Length: 185
Image (cartoon, rainbow, N blue to C red; front, side, top):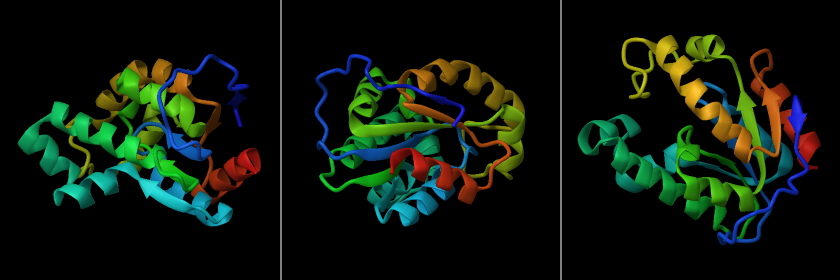
């Protein structure tokens, strides 16, 4: 781990299930889904991916929701998916959508959800991981430029919610999962 907080900061009164979830946050391309699946397997827990939950519940891809309904509508669905995941009484590994930290209420939920791990990587690394980015509507035609801007905007927010920070730029998903499993065991 690069950094670890005590988690002793004052937490709000937002209600969660009381389960000690492991929530992965970070930018698109940081590996939340891949690391999360492997981590859940290591810990014997259920895995919940916010984006997958949204797509399953609404029968459309994230891109389709962005294009049809707009970003504000997607952000509402993102908040609903997070609330449902952290409200589950069964302990799980949750891959939170990348922009979930933009909403203060979501950050309050994250503060009470369990252990929040920020999967951090430089925008240059993320740009190589996002591929053709067809399913990533925010990237447009300048993935690196957008990722740099989003990173600058979101870094303080990820830092605010993270109990631990793991630099994943040089780690495989399995290595990252192993390190997080040690932290939460």
